[in-house]
Structures are given as C-alpha cells and as structure tokens.
Image (cartoon, rainbow, N blue to C red; front, side, top):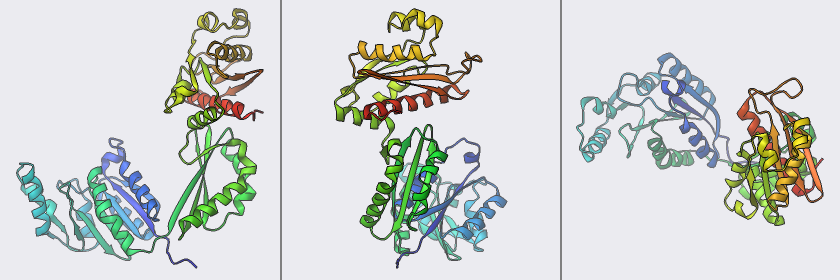
Length: 421
C-alpha cells in the first residue's frame, strides 16, 4: 500500500505578450521540470491573455483540476497587470499595504540609486488572504494562498525572479505540505520506424505494463521516443522495474533502438565508431554539409570523422569525386548508380572504413514527374559492400534535409552493426 498521494499541478502563464508570440514561455517549461523532480505531476499548462473574464475562468478551471496552481506574470504596477486585483476578487478579499513589502521595495530602489515612486509603492499592496513572499531580486512580491483545498502561488514573469522564488520558497513549501511520490523516467530512443508501426510491434507488451508504469510515444523527425514513467516510493525499485520492462520489450524492437534518455543519433554513431575503431567520410549533395555538422557537433568526433566533400554541382561530382560522367548523363545525379559511386569513392579518397553519401531533390523546385521533389538516394559503402536506399520525402526543403540526415545516420548505424535489411 502506498503512503503518498498523487499531487497534481497546473501552471498558468498570464500575459498578452505570450499569446502574441513576442515572448517565448520558457517559465512553464522550467517549472514543469522542477516539479517533476520532486514528484508533482503537471496536468495542465495554460496561457491566458490580459483579459479579466479569461483569467477568472482560468482560475476556476485550474482550481477544479489541480492541487497546486502556479502562476507567472501580470504582477506589475500598471493598469494592464491584472493578476493581483483579480486574485483578490477571486478570493473575495481586500488589497492592503504590507509594511514589510513596502520596506523591501524601498530598499530595492535605494540600493540602485533610484527614486521610489507612488506607482512603485503599489507593489507592496497585496490581497489580505495571501502570505507575502519576499522577492529578493525584483520588486513584485510572490503571493501564496491556501484556499478551497488548493495551494496557489503567484510569481513575476521575469525568469530569474520566478526561479528564485521557486527554489527558495515554493519547492520547500510543497515538500513540507505533501507526502510526494518519486517519479522515475527512462526514454527508449528509436529510429527507422514510424509511431503506428512501433505501437503495433509492442502492443502486447504495452498491455501488460504494471499499473505504476506509464508509456508515452514521443515522435519527432524520423525518430520515436518511448518514455517509461514509473511512480512509487523507492527510487531503486522503480529503476529496477523500468529496466525489467525494457528488457522485455527489447526483443521486439532492438534493431530500431539507438540509445536512451538524452543520447542523440549522432552521439550513438560516434560511440559505435569509437568502440569498433572505425572511421567515416561523407559525400553530401542535397544535404549540403548538414550531416557533417551533426557528426562534428559531438566532442571527440575527430577520432572517427575523416572529413567530407559537398560536390553540389555535377561537374564536381565527376572532377573531384570521380563519379563517371556517363553515369551522371544517363542516370542523373539523383540515382542509385550515382550514389553508389559517391559512397564508394569518398570512402577510398578519404581512407575511411565507411563512406556515406546523399543526393536528392530537396525542393521546393527542381522536381519532375519521374523524380519529384523529395526524391533522395542515400548510400553507405564499406569493404566489399554498398547499401543504398531511396527516400520519398516531402515538399519542404529544410524538412527534407533533416529527414535525409536522420535516414543517412541510421543507415550508417545499421552498417556498423551489420544489421542492414
């Protein structure tokens, strides 16, 4: 039997500037991470503009959903900052001067050699039902409420002010109020298989997961992450339970798994090449050096990356990379015949164990009926072997470049592991 209760939180970000896209809401992302660390589950993140009706509706909805409501923004002294007066109205209380808060604001301005104006003094007027929480790095105090079986905290939207209040007051306060569970995450990272196909492969395993372990599918460009989240009271037990489930699912999807948690595909490639003491060189046409950029973004990549050519024009594919002119004339730059020679020749030219090549029509122009935009050929060559793959991608240029990079790195991974299809 568990001794903890699942505590649910909602993050409410207030301000028109967030809805207009003038400011990116990094606060909510950061708060979610910090709450996850202490075992509080964020069930909703809401953004609302500077509108009385919408803010009051957001307060009511959050109260109905969550045990804790954490708010950012709308605490300035001007008329467009509505959070403080609306909290007073919502909790049916007055706003009065808090002498301690006024002294803090006065000290803040004096230290900076600035005059304390009447408008600034309004920062020290707070709803009578709140607990005053000093803001040591700004002028807008935090306000803590415990009303209607819900804990509420209102904080400034300035990130460094919010983080200070969270670390010094909110996190310790939540820990003292609740017996919290431990939340343990582990992410399985897969490549080369779509979300629905992956779900089909692991359907039976997923149906047998223990009740305290949840699975989430997190698709991204050419990849799908499987996040296992376990809830409990003992970290080591949760970790062991998750590892057990990973071992059970591996037989179904092992060939698609390239790493765990924060490991990227390019990091995985580097790890494999170093383990096997192998080197790679690239010939990139449609990707324009993007794959090389990914590989060299990893510290220590000089141990396994020999270099690259970007023979964008056909003339340089033949003159520098030694692709046969007749092949380019008859088959074209975007063809299996060309990509084979690109991969094999770059391997030889750069004295590498693997040669990786890409050539395609990134778009948005340049395609035709036989080879529409998004047609890409990739190849990986190593001693005595060359594997090719044809991709039919999208109409979006940057997306095609990124998807080609993922597919190319995955092809290299499969060749290193000798698990090509």
